[in-house]
Image 1 (tube, rainbow, N blue to C red):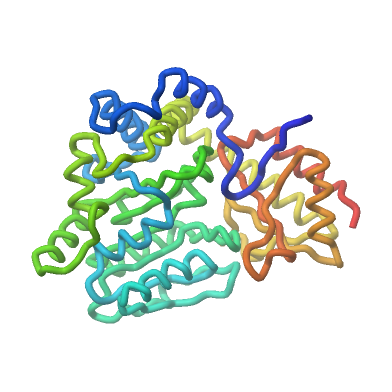
Image 2: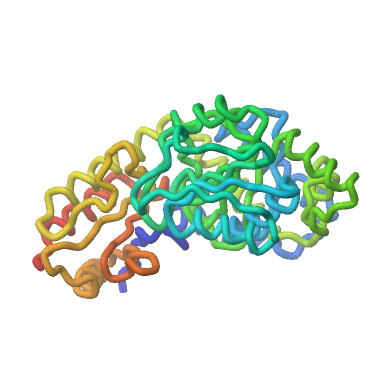
Length: 363
């Protein structure tokens, strides 16, 4: 039986070296080591160092480990907002970030764009006490990616407001300098190509100061996963609780492999593969890009809309027979869209094979 090739947007295809690293981890009993041991400190140090190298993260930014990207919504809001946050919403996941703020009784300013589009910085007018702008760089539900120039404009327009960016389905493909934002986060089961269960949270000193100011006022910033608590351990390459030791180990190994290839080549390959997929979709008589404005089209999460009576179920069955699996549409778009991951583990040849299969499908 042939193995399936997963073009799903998360959980995604494992990075092509992950299997060997998993075997090594089990052989060396990595899941059983103490998170208070020197061995774990070395694992944390390696993972953080390789991530810093791959994404060109400045030394002034701290790398913290959580359970998931979803958890980070709450942690950012608990630590960095007292009263008001601002959210750019253009899909289901950016909407859930805003809903998390509302659930924490934070005054929530929401600026909405149509699904498949992005909000222009010119359309944002913040109230005087807005403390944080939350932006989803790549909206997994719709395949819309915020133009990098918008991040520069937001930073320039709101230099004193914390800027938090969700890069969950983009990382490691991040096309803006980390210095332009105050905090960003992602999880490993998408572009990094690892089993789910590990979130990465990157924060700067401004976020730490905000959390400390809240503490000094007697306000809650959460419990064991507050920025000060995480940092107190991170400086020793440790975590407050027993973490996903296996996940952190695998992260360090896979990032080392990615660094051998280099971020420049990863981006070049991602851009090429995205172009192949969009060209195939535009050439099909039963598909069209859901994101019509090319400026907003994601490079890592390609979303196509079914047209001319094409059956989502039939298309998925056709691809599965060829051992290729793509994601359904998200939410209300479940049977109207397909979503295709374009992550570093997907080779150019694999993407070209998928493109050929899409072109050969008969409605």
